[in-house]
Image 1 (cartoon, rainbow, N blue to C red):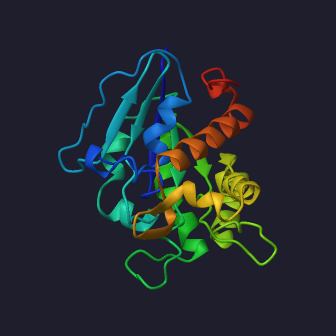
Image 2: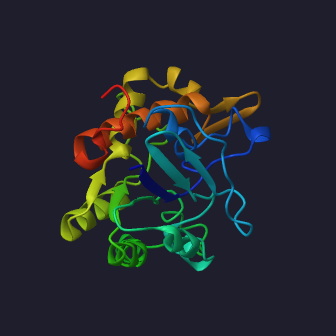
Amino acid sequence: MKKHIFLAGDSTVQSFKAEEMPYFTGWGQVLIEVLGTGTLSEVVYPEKDFPQAAVYENDDVVIHNYAMAGRSSKTFLEEGRFAPMLSKMQKGDFLFLQFGHNDANKEKPERYLTPEDYQKKLMEMISPAREKGVKCALVSPIAMRDFNEEGRCKISFPEYRQAMKELAEREKLHFLDLGKATAELCTGLGAEECKKLFLWVEDREDNAHLQRRGALEFATLLARLIYREIPELGEIVRGK
């Protein structure tokens, strides 16, 4: 029986249209390439009201990517983006939540949440999903290209990563620490080589958004975390 994974998040997770690629690419768009086997079925765009939502399917897994650029957990809920996801979830499915980049933005109060309120908004998605028998995983926000004087890439939004980790421990949820893993990868590559992961293209110098290479490398890191932390999904991770 195929595994179903639902993704909610921001632009670092989102699926982008062909005219925006290969530059703008979210890890949720390429996760299908590191999970499951067989040929990718035709991509389906199931939501008229939210046309960026995309469904990817192969022989072993169906990935429902509802992530949207510029959204925090607060605005994702307020705009009604979670409701259509929830309506499709069934017992035994998985829900992955990655928010934090926009939740931490004090300059945009419509998005901003304190770490404590951030936990509460995450629970507004987790609780109804768990009532349906869905297994939930919290994914810490990916690292930005942000290096300190010692040449190490910082873990981005550390207060929100910590809030997410504490929530996962308290609620007995899977915690996939993609923020730490991506920071370590960037540190290993170095500040200059790391530009090839992010949107350093033409006249753009973007340390937050990913191009295809970065999205695929980050998705690969997530697959390794899935293999280690979620035994029920470990069997569909490519390469193990």
